[in-house]
Amino acid sequence: MHELSVAESICRSVSERVGDARVEEMVVQVGALSGVNRASLEFCLGEAAQVTGLKLERFSVERVPARARCECGETYEADELMQPCPRCGGFSRSFINGEDIVVSKLVAVEENDEAN
Ligand SMILES: [Zn+2]
Image (cartoon, rainbow, N blue to C red):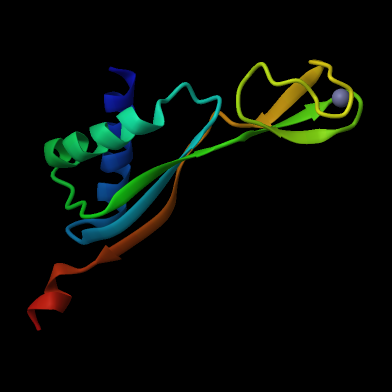
């Protein structure tokens, strides 16, 4: 499953960043054109955290719209690939973003802090 490999790579890179710290909260944003299903990525993150040993307590996945720039000059948010320009109704646009998968929020807490 595509989402599982995405989830594993997210967990690995977060692990590298936070080390042994516990992740209290993580928000992952998936672009509307990333081809990743929000709900299934959310499910897979839980699995991937166990596989990679990441202490992931709370997390959520948000779907964010893509940004498109039409040849008429309009820039608009597109929730899917086949969304026409709201100004001219055309499809002569290029996408500025929308394929990205990013960790937009990460709150990590060192385990030692709690023991004291
Ligand atoms: Zn247009």
